[in-house]
Length: 465
Image 1: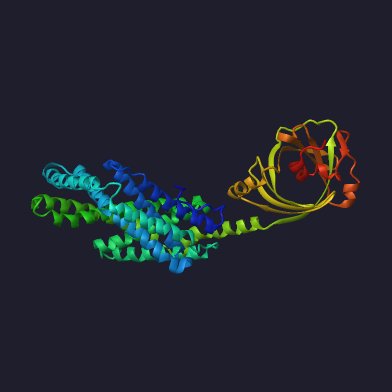
Image 2 (image 1 turned 90 degrees about the horizontal axis):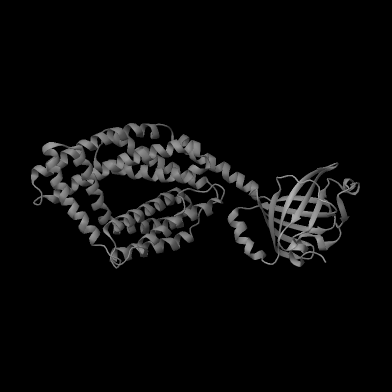
């Protein structure tokens, strides 16, 4: 799956959709990867990963909910219900793992009694895994829901501005803070703890999504929420175990069930004490302060994207020459590949990528010494999407910047089909300065007004004969 993080170099709506679809695609792949007779451990792993992806999607959906309107609920319901289809299998494995931990922490008679309960759960877990096969209607139903959710996510009205995410994050934080305060005031029911656990988990997902805009600030928050989520998750597993002990009446003697219940409750008290203390660090401040730490960097990131997306407009004044004799070249030449998307008279649209990672989309108009230029910075994905459309209209070259008396000359050594061609260009700030240029001795004939040597012409027609 794509990393569960929003990429601050992408448009925000694109970054959100990419992560959401990644969650769903991996869930589908996991279910499709189960063969006709999967091994129990493969079943457990697949189910665990499918449910995780569903929870991650729901965390993202909650974050973007203020922008999603009526489109939020159907996706949330499908992701939730797909996980529920598989919950019996996963829950059986979780209870077994929880009992294993209790047995390991016990000794003597208590350990022996806990082992009785543990062995019963091991049989239940094995049966749950063994009952699942590729044609199981639960898998088919879960997959159908996930595929349906994917189609809806494709059309989600995701925000290009961070403001709705700020609102979604604040709502999640306030939900968690309310649940923490209730638990802190000794309303220590399993239901209250479970409500807090879900709110913490959602906040953890959302912090992970937003972290890349300012990793140094977000990392401590993500780590705290991860730890808090683990504490409350273990508490919830123990609560489910206690509830399941009533179902064991008649299969497991009362002494064994009582021993398991006491051990579980004792461990729950320890976990909740630690969770409430850690919750004070996460939820002790204001909601606005918490939100600002994660959302403000996204305001800056989006502002920077928009500034970068604005075209740079300029008038280019330059003269172009052949090269009589190569000067000493510096070692730090810049490799360039560029291709032309469209050519119409003296207007050209090109994309360019350089070896230092710069990528641009440029519109050039005019001919000879003076041309107008509009240029946009673009990302790798957009460059790669455009590049195939330049087939048959491309050039490759290495550019060297060489100091000369009036400034800097840009010397291009061409490669590929133009191997052997070398041109040098000199720009000036004014028509007067351009006309006054005295070419150095190593410059050759001037070809400024010979359109055959324009890059667009070279890309289409090749090297002049």
